[in-house]
Image (cartoon, rainbow, N blue to C red; front, top):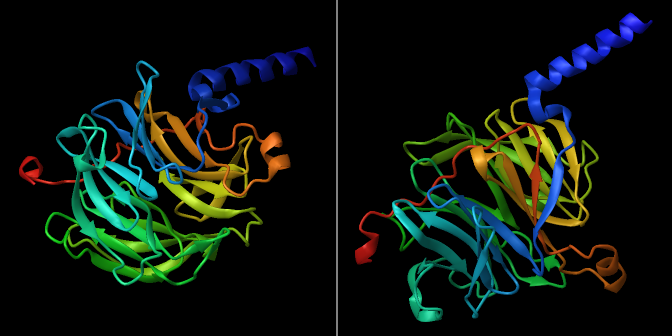
Length: 336
């Protein structure tokens, strides 16, 4: 019996050496408190910095991961829903405010005059706003909108998924219409497939993706929250080096890991808050999973039970790592 036990311990020790942190429990850290509706984390590899937004407070935040310092820019005239960096222009961002997209220099003056308008969408739908977006491997921004929100109820089928590049910024291309709450987007490493979330469907869908043409086709459901009895709705999403999807579960209190080939649930990582909004890989070797959360709609009892709701978290030790984040391609942006 003693020999068997020793062999088991030896096997566990060998697995720990080979697999590293895969046998350890992931560590969840609270990075930044005090938010209302944190969303849209975006990693800038050139700056070793994480950008994210607070939609309700109309702010963009920046975490310098080397120093740990967080700096903030306040927009101040509408919901701010995404921020992505511009390639070869450190600290220059595309930001979405209401249904408009602007260029913003992080080091510019702290007022609205530092924003340069790039595009406006959903004209004729004044209650619509941009909600989420990602950049593909060719530097094009894919972003979507949502309808009017009243007491957490969204007007259905009022939004659109768009694709914008330097050539069509005045009229971004319509890719999917209608949608209700356009949300998470991710691509496989070989750029053959694009994953997409329209949150109220409670599904993660997949398209065949043509990188060169910037087209999608053959939409089908990869993963159903209902079929796997996953609570909440899918929100923001990212993908790791192994091709697995990591999805924030809004009103579900967790991040789930999904096999993007088989559409199977692999892992669930619970957080101390219920409204998990988005996820993004960053940090050293892209091994840190940053997670944004919200406290919108929580009552006094729920707020007392979830004091860190509306915080930025980091999950370390998952055994997974991400892919470098794409940046928007905008030649001649200095003269724009």
